[in-house]
Image 1: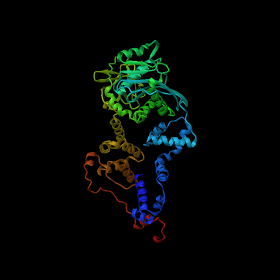
Image 2: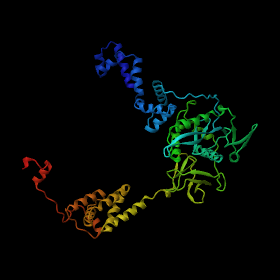
Image 3: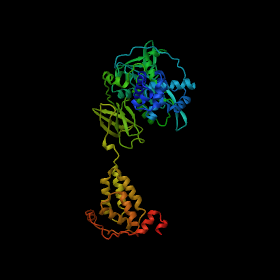
Image 4: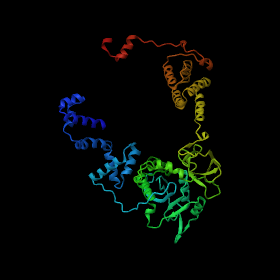
Length: 521
């Protein structure tokens, strides 16, 4: 756009100096029709006819898609449309551009969103590390497996200063212990805890209030005492005191969850975690005009470190879901457990032993994994013993394939060389060999194997070509009973007793010409 504006400016400048259109075109080395197009155009006309359409072009190509979203979901926000365009198409667009474009489409096609009725009062941001607000929300989403709507519950968290967010989703109404576990999970995610938590007067937190004296639930009271936190419960009808978390829960529901299809709970959690990284904590906040994850990098230093001494016989034991990649989340990092655990163990128990993290199968004493605790964030802590040993399966395939040859020892040399030279594709190579040899008799297979060893052709494709060659009766290579001798045979000498097929010259010409050329008859 800058070059086009510069060209427009030069045309107008030369016009004012008395140059003709022909002279301008020759001087700027552009076509006269281009000069004529901009000759009498005012700056406002340039902006309306050239600049604005060019800015909207990337959105115009998605106009029908955006209109379908607006028509199907009239209450969808421009922010959610912006996130969907990033998620589904990888578009990197300014949110304000999307917001303006959506506003234009709503006016043009008379698609009106529902008007909000709740009002909030502005309050000052508390200091870093002081306060975190917590609230619960629910939303119904379509479960595409059951073809019914599924109600999901979310416990949301936000640090009041940086607006750094976290959330835990539940497929059923959470209980008091779920609230405690979610708070601990949040502390682990953030790598520390604030000094004060702000809640509604929720049944998961408090069972009664007597003129300011709060009676907490048993589970939450034990947690409050162990963590030594200040708790602030909002009065009824006092939304401004926790307006930040109200907005965050709404953000979770209407930017991430609404209109998103539900399949499995672990899939939902993974998509939510990706959304937090992509949008939830990476999007500039509309009030602070700062990006939460960048402010959190500073605020994290003001949080109190957490370290849970977990006793397996205690109610405070930490339970974690097993992820589909056979890892477990702990304090913002992924720790591996043996491959194949996902689907066998839905949950695991975590225990801290000094600087080690012990992972047990849920409700039993089977130790699945032991790791050194990592104090960084976003890391994959891996135990190589947990990885699938692919070489075992390759070795089994190799032994099985050797047995299908008349000379297993020679076949072993051939297959070992393929495995060494094409380790990454060894499985594909062996599968092709196994598929091919079943189509030929043992004598042809033996001839092709000897030919490949003598000429050091260690490839399934070369072996297949050799099979095809010898199956046509174009032979022969002597069979060797000594595979070592075959391997040491020089490739510079001609292959003994190999008869080269000879064809008549006129016959070859007729083949190349199509076989029916009257000039050759």
